[in-house]
Image (tube, rainbow, N blue to C red):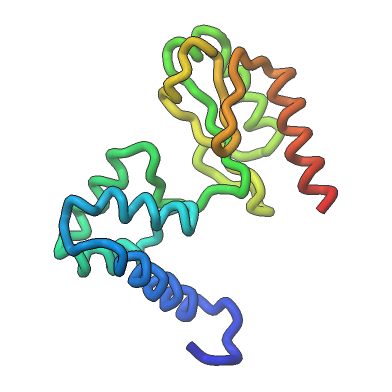
Length: 170
């Protein structure tokens, strides 16, 4: 990488490849390690970049298609970057019948994005998920790893305001 280079795509690609190689040094070259590796890569970047997938494919001698299949099978993994605050709104049966669609509609209205998108400033993203495993608390939404149960649109607004105010005070 060049000394003068600031965030060019070529340098970013090389940085991701190098950092992925450093992650891989901790793991034996066994196919069984794939999920652990993907998990660590996602923790580092917030998603699993294609450049990282290529390095993992080569390291484990696994075709890219198989890695892609694992990433897309498990809802925990994502191929696209998320916002600093990723809002997951459960639309599983228990949550849906108790009004989670209204919470999703409010999130879309307030943030002016659709599920799978990120706000222009990169602060917020929305995902509609099928189940977060908290059916007894339905309806549920999450912001990053924080679960909000027995949720209402009013509660969602209050929580979102808190996160927005934290960002504005920085």
